[in-house]
Length: 115
Image (cartoon, rainbow, N blue to C red; front, side, top):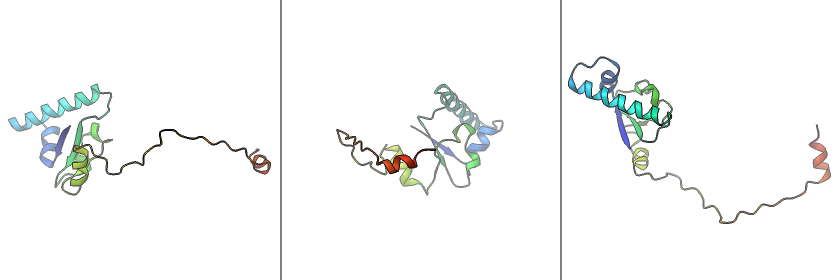
């Protein structure tokens, strides 16, 4: 998993022309991630965008807009659950054998279904 720390500085580094080596590296890594996203058929399997203070949803790259975005520090618990791949809500167990029960409908109900 790759956490993308989205901040005003990250937005400036990846959108504009790089002004220093840090910005060039940020832009380079951003392009690598975007290329991987495209190669995976525009399905996100690894990237976790996290908005830091001062950043808004508009700062999230376009190719990550359909991904769940976490806010730091408000979504700390949800982010940790995602990183550890733990579900917040455990679904009820499914029985090994499912029973299908078919009941005939009374005549009065079947006549109501006619157009």
